[in-house]
Image (cartoon, rainbow, N blue to C red):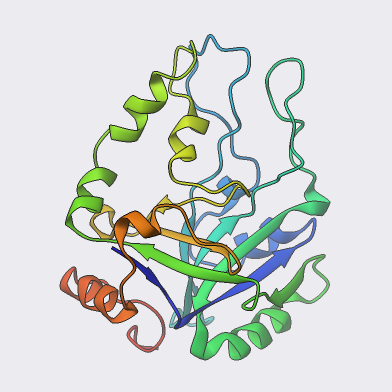
Length: 235
């Protein structure tokens, strides 16, 4: 099943000091979003595709260590990225780095004000892009079984002649033509897949999975014992 999470909103961070700003503000290590690298040392393919960093789940706390907000952080796909002679991308342009945050919709204005207060002189722009992007979740028995298996890796390994799994093959079945794709939920594998997609597009696999009300995802998540957002996580 797949659910459009209408209670969630999306914030965008953009600028050369985005990672530095977030690294000093949230509870998780976000440096993996800065320059994701392909894995596998014995790859024989000259054109190894770039690997999109998985999302990072993190929280923002008070100076005393009390919970304030939680969010999923995604690195935006770079549609202008091309391979060079070695098969690697040209590397990220820190001035164009964009990180998107899937946040609780009921506190988005409060969160924006808090983030801008901590920004000080950091070279990072922070704005709501809730009208342009939507948050989605895929969940259910069959989906969670697939997420813990090597189904997609097996399919991707048969594409091309490389010595390792073709990561673009893994993501092609999970993504759309704009570079946005489903990711394993970073909290628990049994929760399925999480993603943000442009609001004017239909995410891949939604029609096959059958779209359902967000309330069904809420029940599924609570059955797994996972709290989400400041309404469930006590401040």
